[in-house]
Length: 539
Image 1 (cartoon, rainbow, N blue to C red):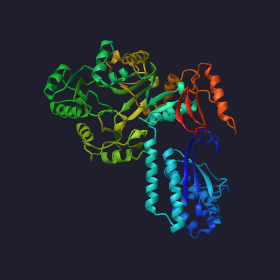
Image 2 (image 1 turned 60 degrees about the vertical axis):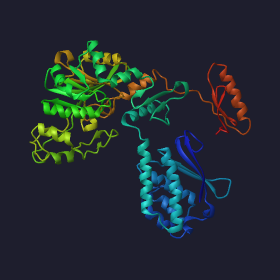
Image 3 (image 1 turned 120 degrees about the vertical axis):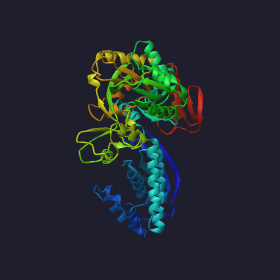
């Protein structure tokens, strides 16, 4: 067999108006043309040994095992390759089900059409299916190591192209509103809409996010200075660049307890809170300095209270979450190590930001926090007793989120909205420490600790406790206000002769309305008056 051509489709097409993501393989069956599977010795047996899960394919009989019954009775190899390509993707956790196999006007040449979830994975699966079937024809089997490698490669394609939880929330909201989207080829950017009406996002940065706002948010001390000058409560603190200045900085903020963190850190890296003595301060300084690109460290007064993340979109508070540091709750029987093990069995927990919750890791920081509470990894906490394993409440270090959106005080809503506008961010995550978010910060000595650009959405979209919030809806409302959906008018012209002439005439008419027109003809793709790409691009 020989693959003559592989084509990727990304929209309503000749094969289906419902299944937009298809790979079309032009396949020459060569000497297998007109040889049915029932006539190939050992093929049926070899196929079910290599891919026993094909029993789930109903095919035209419409029952479990329907496809395998077709193979046993005899079907052409193109049909088998279609189902194998689908099953390989299915085994790699990419559920797909649409496929078609049709002979062309050239004897022995078939069009094999297979749905894909990821473009690269779909093309890979088509080629791997040909390899697998050819091997079974020639040897009666396909090596288990090769199949395992195929599945690992397919999963890698899936992982590389997978959207993070924040991006996925925005994309799903766009789909629900009929707004088209596509992944761009660089910097993990997503395009929403087409042409002049398109918008772009990168995680939770949008094309409307100002670079000055992002730069300021990355400068924690600069953020604090501007907020303080605007009358917004922030922690008392100072910035140092050398270890020799640490003692003086501690005295400047009023002594212990303090917080030491990198000037340009993120995701809670390099932060140590509730530092109570010089030995802890030395260690915390080294940690913060190592995490800072500029080796610049912030020393702040430590404020007691609960950690909150407030999400502001387009100047409006849309969600509030209380973040609780990674912890386990005693049962009176299990050690801390066992409790961590049981907590990590939660199917929502995983590694990285793509999961609702992150696994709790036992490291030097966790052991130090335990020791401060009077525990070790082998201690058995009393029933209902809470053992914290992190000082910071970041979800990326195993923390949980509790929705508090309905509890926030109106004065705080105004304050946080104002803070986001002062920094200049269209989408901002504001970190707040306060004993009670339902009371004005000024009454409970609460402070705004940080203002973050590109804040994560997962704590609001899927909180551990409380109501999920449609924060992506606020982003889409900002990018596409009213009934806008990011689309542009499209003319589709088909026929035998005269398509190019008709296209040019329509383009000329539309140009008279003052619009920029893009169109494809037999000699190339045009944008306005200019040839963008030569070649017969009418298809």
